[in-house]
Image 1 (cartoon, rainbow, N blue to C red):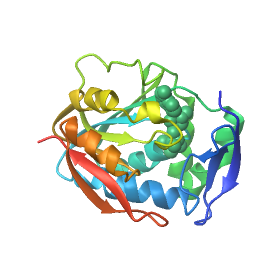
Image 2 (cartoon, rainbow, N blue to C red):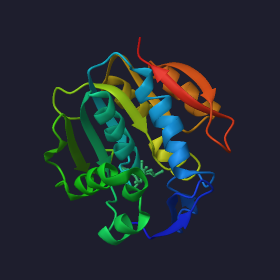
Image 3 (cartoon, protein in one colour):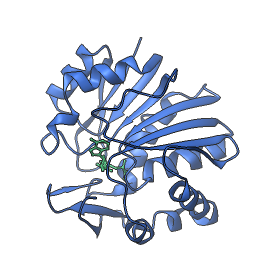
Length: 223
Ligand SMILES: C[S@@+](CC[C@H](N)C(=O)[O-])C[C@H]1O[C@@H](n2cnc3c(N)ncnc32)[C@H](O)[C@@H]1O
């Protein structure tokens, strides 16, 4: 387990600070603002015509991206299969303290609780049509779920300076092999080295405007 403490970000939403890494789970310029921009606006909304989206999240963490995706899917009446890999599950104390469920009304609260009540390594229905599997493992050794190819990959590891082993050519080759044709990867990172590695792994890359506090972010597609 990582040693984390809850801190407030500029949009009023909380995030976690990891003392050992001197790193946050989200941008200090706004945790919810960043997740909505990087993963929802530039990820989820880039696949508007898919009635069933198969998502892989690298680093479930607080479950914020999962919550935002579930809220969107519910409103849009789309189905989701959501696989989220996590090496360091958070304590129930941290999850209740982070308070994301309360930001999105009754439905948000219910969905957030269901995400965190779901058993690890089992498929659970967060609500009918939104099936979640939280996979407790080290992404470095995980080889995918049998027969599953992803439409959308949320790559949300700690930063390349803090956790370089998660940003290697081998990791991006593994992810591209798990992504279906037309599938996309999004990340908050914008480094040239990351873009080149994703590109070498087969993603056609684009730089997009970043969330507050960041000039750019990256999106890749398998053509
Ligand atoms: C930047 S945080 C983002 C978390 C999450 N997406 C959120 O919104 O709260 C990075 C996440 O990756 C997880 N992580 C780090 N190394 C990992 C590994 N080797 N395998 C799986 N998860 C890992 C961390 O525990 C953390 O939850």
